[in-house]
Amino acid sequence: EPPPDAASTLPHVVRYLTNPWVATIGLGAVAAAVMSSVDSSILSASSMAGWNVYRPLWRPSANSRQLSTVIRRCIWIIGLAATLLALRVESVYELWFLCSDFVYCLLFPALVTALFDRKANAVGAAAGFVVALVLRFGGGDPILGLPVWLPYPMIEEGTVLFPFRTLAMLSGLLTIVVVSRLTQHWRPAVQLRPGE
Image 1: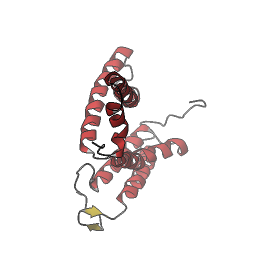
Image 2: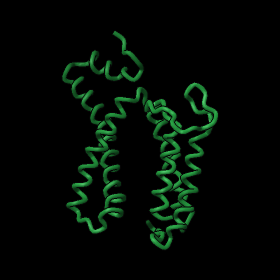
Image 3: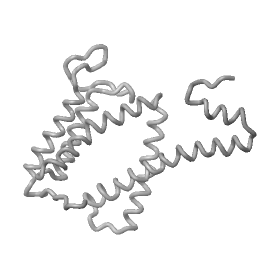
Image 4: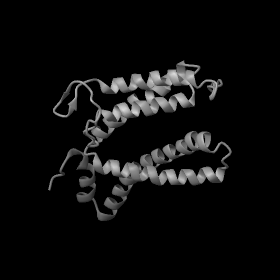
């Protein structure tokens, strides 16, 4: 029987054209290669959540034991969210498009201001993230099955033709700039030192 799609060719060849013990080792190697990327992504996301969100915002005096506990919990949360997302999305290309969409709308404004605006601070970055998040998800998402709930212009058959992703990105960028300047006395910007 032929493989159902091109991505299944290697597992089919290994399974049907080799000895059972070679097939087991080969399929195990493919699974290990995939899992090494997955677990490193989950671990890095959890570490960033612990070191860059939990420690600076909630517990600046957190010791390594507390950070380790937070990172372990984040591994479970991110792993569960990734599993649910993988079960929901039908194509790797859809997942790639979704991730690049989120990076453009949510993370790009913070990156630009971190590099080019000396007055940008954490409060501005958080406010810009929230504004961009609301505007981005207000346009809905067919991949995640989210309906349009903000009244954007140019909506045809449930699809927003208005460039709401660019609006979300620019609004997030403007929010970071404005809120950072308004909260400069309360939370001054931290300058990066050379070599960081």
